Image 1 (cartoon, each protein chain N blue to C red):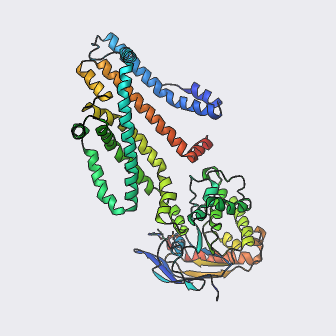
Image 2 (image 1 turned 90 degrees about the vertical axis):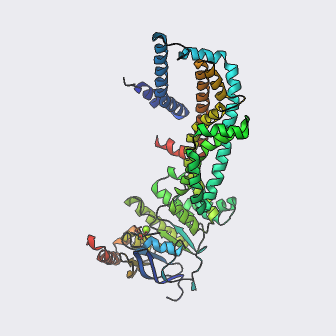
Image 3 (image 1 turned 120 degrees about the horizontal axis):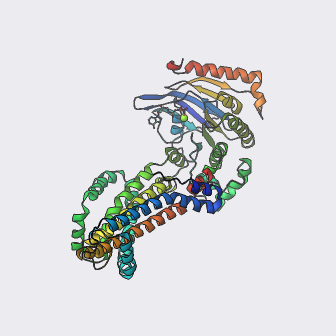
Length: 277
Length: 255
Ligand SMILES: Nc1ncnc2c1ncn2[C@@H]1O[C@H](COP(=O)(O)OP(=O)(O)OP(=O)(O)O)[C@@H](O)[C@H]1O
Ligand SMILES: [Mg+2]
């Protein structure tokens, strides 16, 4: 059945200003919400009427109940995961930024470094994660490193692509004004890369949480990854799914933050979109 | 011509197998407005690439105020064919770009640009982004960015090429008035015969690739000029002559 959301667009059409923007956001989010709710309903229906055991597939209502009952344990385990994700992500943004600048200024470095980065992306996480834990222990450090490893490359590629997307006339103009290579970078190449950077950031942030959980899965004192592992070993899929819900929530919130930062960092794009409406 | 600001002798350029400029001779006197007319792809922008130092000439000599031009930095204010406004900079910040590159402090740069905003029809739009401007306004911002650099000579590459006919005509009138006022030494590239006649003191016509000067015409119309002056017999005669030269040189597949 096709979802008809014309009533919503009609209401949105009547709103103006900030109310309109909020209305548009709701209008954009609600088909996805309907889909998620539908999936959960089918799932609930299936678990109730198919006779499947809760130790195989628990009902969503049961998962929700577990989330509420175990909220303290979930929060305790989510915090280290969030810490690992954010620190690893910060490390990766900083190193992607620095190496992208190096590569932009020293062309031969690009040919030397890119193959290495590509190889780093082909390493299977399942094999690398236990090794990194073996080398760096059960603390925060191996998690940070793994998160950085999985998120570095998309960001680095986005930045380098962004620099290269710079309008040639803009660079020519700056050169004609007597700009140095560094001035051309700061005034044209870097700003041109901002939209690309945020695309990279949005892709990376979704990998980041998964990377952190994977690292914890291979050995940690606390964290959603190790929580999932012990829940699985205790035959508690409901708790596994409760932890999965938490990780999805963290990813969504972080994703929302990047979108927000993106908007704030590119006021000229906002102006352009508002004028088009 | 004795005291040329800019003087090109036998300037040639090839890009690999492509012979673009086939020996250009050209002079611009101080305070003179000179236009270059030529078919598309004949190498007009390439000439500006050479003058701004973006590429080196394959042969020939370029003299600036009598001395050989070795370092073009600081001599020309260049306006590229597409306006090349930075979408992330507000109008005022686009306008001061050249001063910023020269190291002029922000406040001082704004102070220098402020009195020109009115003349350029940009008063009240300082804080707008380029995406919020009309085509004509964008070109005026680009022109403002060019002239505030306070260089000895302007290089304008088809400043009005992307505009509709009406806006273009009004921009030409506006530029003519501006030029009356400031008497910049200017070299303008254009496709538009009427534009060249209306604005210039002298016009060079280039052939198709490899480009050479096939015609040089002085425009003895008085100043200030209005659009009406374009229907004077003198003006129509020049226009016809220019068109003949251009069409005669057009690439064979169009002839
Ligand atoms: N840096 C470059 N490398 C190689 N070829 C180039 C380069 N710059 C220009 N060309 C070529 O030189 C020729 C002339 O280009 P140019 O931009 O100077 O023409 P133009 O007269 O300005 O044309 P238009 O009127 O369409 O702007 C074109 O065929 C172009 O492809
Ligand atoms: Mg051109």
